[in-house]
Length: 176
Ligand SMILES: [Zn+2]
Image (cartoon, rainbow, N blue to C red; front, side, top):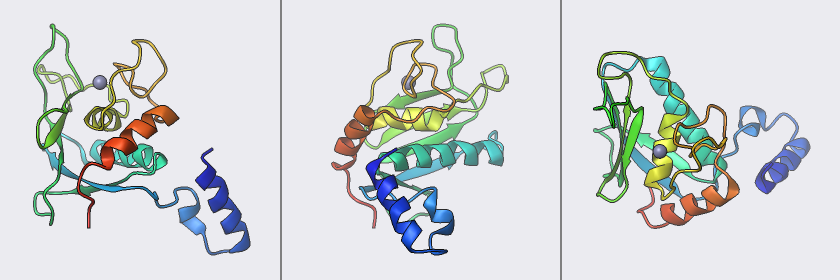
């Protein structure tokens, strides 16, 4: 449990009835970061909102408030997140996502299906690929870690990964 969670829980005890839904996810206190989201019609709305929801939650646990904006949004973003129909095979294998951390804007792409149309197994793929854009590399192959090459269904970012993410988030313009 993060220290801020403890503090928040203590506050809620004293403010009886005043905390409600926010108790489970206090507003992140660190930098806010805008992410431009573009979506292919191949993505079902439920799967899309699940990916965005878990990404927002995982970054929120690191203190980062992700703000997802669309093309009509107000501000240019340093981070692009594209939900695409499919990505080309890598070494003959289908991939769920890929990240380009060294270009500007930084860009991650997440595929709904393999090139042959077979839906892919997404394990917090958006959180994982955004993790790359915020400076994280891969954890060892079979580790239980959000940044393991094949992702992780339920993992959070580790405290060390959170520190790296926060460091990198500080170098982008803050959302208004
Ligand atoms: Zn990866």
